Image 1 (spheres, one colour):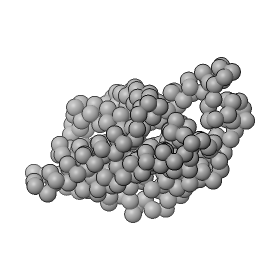
Image 2 (tube, helix red, strand yellow):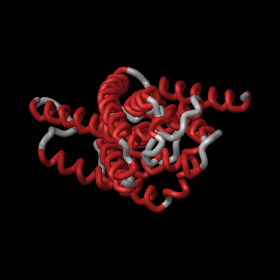
Image 3 (cartoon, one colour):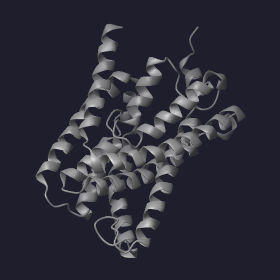
Image 4 (cartoon, helix red, strand yellow):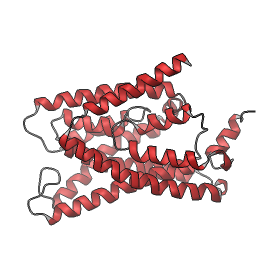
Length: 289
């Protein structure tokens, strides 16, 4: 006999802890860490794969903790990167020498880039919520992500000189991040693409995208954490969530390194192909099943 709507909601907030086993906890943590930064949409994978495996929604506390894990991976990776860049006199962080002025510029740009998604997410949360319950929507938007990445990959051919990030470009990237609230629209993919469309190098666009992601991921996770009643979180969920946080953080750091290497040496086209195959593949399976 299936669970009622209220029972599923209780599971989301920490009850019925036996429903989420270790396999689900580990797989979801790996998916979150791997796909949050690689431009193939973590939200699509976290909606489609559990749907295929008939998993109930993970407890909200667990979901929040694995997102904290990926936020920590951004913080660790780019903090180390920035420290290294300041120690090398011939290095560049965003096209300029890495000094305090550069850091202040990026803080201003991050604020400008965060505002659109924060406002839209807060005001229209109820509008976006139904899209996360239907894998078909996620698969369809994932196909759209493939076209966005393909467009950005094609655009790079027309720029011979890379531009620095400006206040207006950071705001436009922020608007792109707001669009990524839809499941299947890759946050990293659409923000990196928005930077490339404006003539910003792939590497700098990726750095800005990830630091921007740290702010929005952390802010959203803190907001959701406040909503969770502490009495509804069991020791079992706390333990699995802690393990999930560590896994997503480690996998997140590795995926950032991989993506940065790919952006330097290869093309976004490969991620486009993956999005198309995964999205179209799921839609075909859904129709045939």
